Image (tube, rainbow over all chains, first blue to last red; front, side):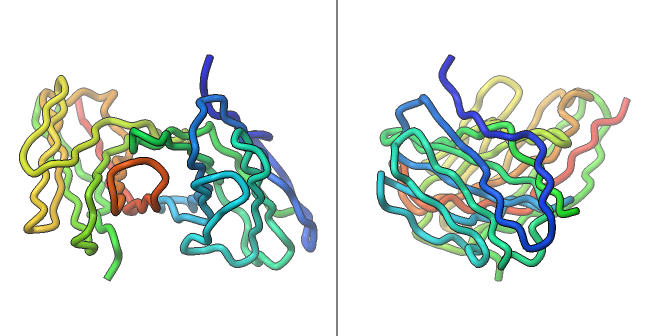
Length: 112
Length: 113
């Protein structure tokens, strides 16, 4: 089945630790996105990529980093510089001809 | 001014009634508009997309777009308890994939028995 897979579903991070969230898609989509959602809030854009080896900062990129070495993969690293990382992280992808974004099931990150 | 604005709700409607959800956006160059439904703890799923002024109907759902007023709405007819969720409005500057997609904060809908 085609889709977007995020892993892990739950992730716990210690203070000062970097963690990487995985996002893989087999939809042959060019564009991929990372969003953050806090309780009772909408989605805020962290980074997005329209093509391999290229990506742009979204509205809240500070403390995060990404890479796009393969079309299928867009991992997000939450660095120690992100002071309040506890949130629900959503990865999405979008095809070239259609503008609907499709989402993975999300990763819930908690700082312990 | 936020790029995409929605009333956070909750919006409560009785079962069988019409629910009306509204969204305004600030970028006049916006071309693509979407409504997503999100159940608690789950990821958003696409309900409707609309690109031209006017109405677009799909089953019990109707999306309405007015670019002059920078306004997009979603009507849900014959509301069911299973429609209780948060509805997110999303806006993109251009048609075609790969552009920045901005979401509103969402409106919580409660359909009461």
